[in-house]
Image 1: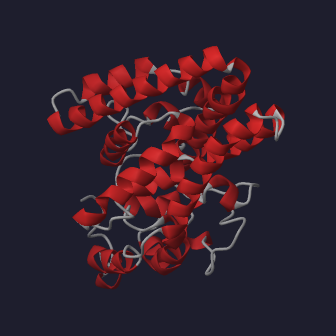
Image 2 (image 1 turned 90 degrees about the vertical axis):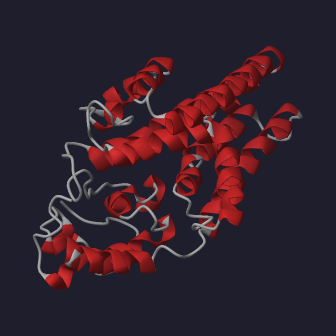
Length: 296
């Protein structure tokens, strides 16, 4: 693998992996709580709004917040960070991911198979499913890219049509996605305004938010290859409001590190990143706090 043998034994890839493994064991209960919590809150908004307990405007505001927190727990599940390699606990990955993604109408199987390809081909313009947002030159281009819909996914399917395992998950995800659309259209007939402001619009906002902070900021103007395909970045927003995606660099190095363990992991891995001359590594504080992570 490119660049792995260009440092001293003290900062070898094997020692880096050993440290990473020490942060890749804990059950991610925080993410499960957020995933189940936001989806349950979102579902509860419907009877609360329809029966007049809260206003539609306030309900829509809460639905947008739920949508913005919908993907991160699924992201942990996609990497098996709930089951941790235990076949008897894989149902937790599946349940949390399916449940939390209802808010943004994204099927777990579709998200998982395309996300694994993103990790395999990060920033490859031909094969990275997220390249359209990662390569955007502005947030406006990110917004436009999120509206591609079926055109984007047809291109992804064409790219990996010879991968039988991928296509099985992809087609299952597409089928579940169609079920979401049928439910949406049914609700539009019965509760048109509520459906617009509690589901359709929040899901759109949530997807734009996720594409901006999960894809565009971490991969903006980066290269391909380990230590190159993701970057550190700073932002005025406290990192907990952008899901700590300033730390997304360490996720691409070691996806098994759970989200809430990334700050400690990046502190421990800082000398290894400096040794490999990763841009921004020297600016990582000895203790990662709320904001800013680093100043570039």
